[in-house]
Length: 239
Image 1 (cartoon, one colour):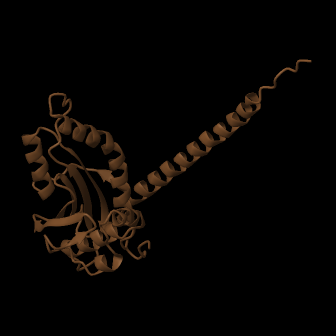
Image 2: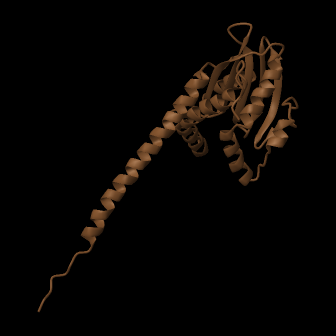
Image 3: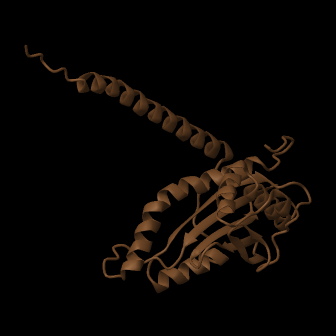
């Protein structure tokens, strides 16, 4: 007597289809929540894109990079904050950088960098005045310059031979406000298309330009988190 063999793969496939659908739906929901949270924080803080001031430390290095290799990945964002009575731009910039480096989001980045061998602590940042180039350092971010001129107090950090992060505070639209600035750049990236560049430079350019849209969103959120941790009028900062 011959018995028909039963194909057990069909029931398993039938089980996998709804599981896959639920996984996709969950991923879509999580992505929507993350996007909504990003939009809420950035909008609440009033973060918007601006041009890198050409006379700033970052602006000069970006211009030199564009005039050299012909390419550079860069961005800058800003938001307006109240300027407390009697507080100078330099003091506000110190508070701003401290709020930035100790924000919950940047703490997560610092934890990753600490695991890679670049530790930093809130206690170190709490006493740092961000005014000693070559000495002040947060994880991989080395302060390379700090200066003030023409209503702008700025600090430039390097985190690789070509990586830059920049903080600035300049006069706001009225006497009782100031503008927080945050910029980043990867210098000496070949201008696209870069098919004639050496292979190493092609890879550098491909990584920089493909990664930059994500970095722009991340940079806006970091600025928003720092902004919301600074005092606003009579409202206390977020912890």
